[in-house]
Image (cartoon, rainbow, N blue to C red; front, side, top):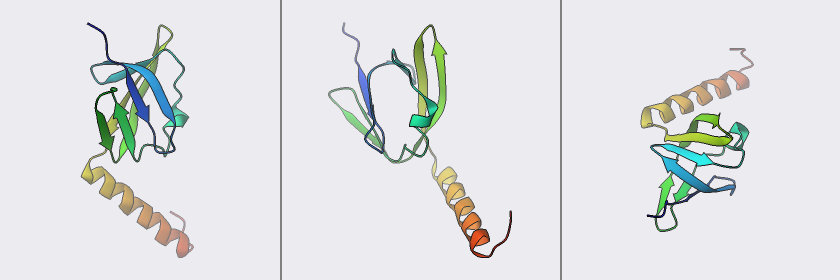
Length: 102
């Protein structure tokens, strides 16, 4: 049985391909850096060559290097997390416009 390979396309069009999946860990033989995911996970498309999954809001949960391979986990942000992020951004905007330091 042939193992599926996955491709992840980030918001800016960055493509991370030739990935294997172990549980919820994607495994790459090429270096994967955290900065590639920073503010770049809305949206994310994950494909196994046959099916595509669209994720509106994700984040990098973990990245590790094991025996020369890079293992990483992406996760969907919950509705509550998105509301909290928006509220914090609104607070910071109001503070900035009012010249108040937080």
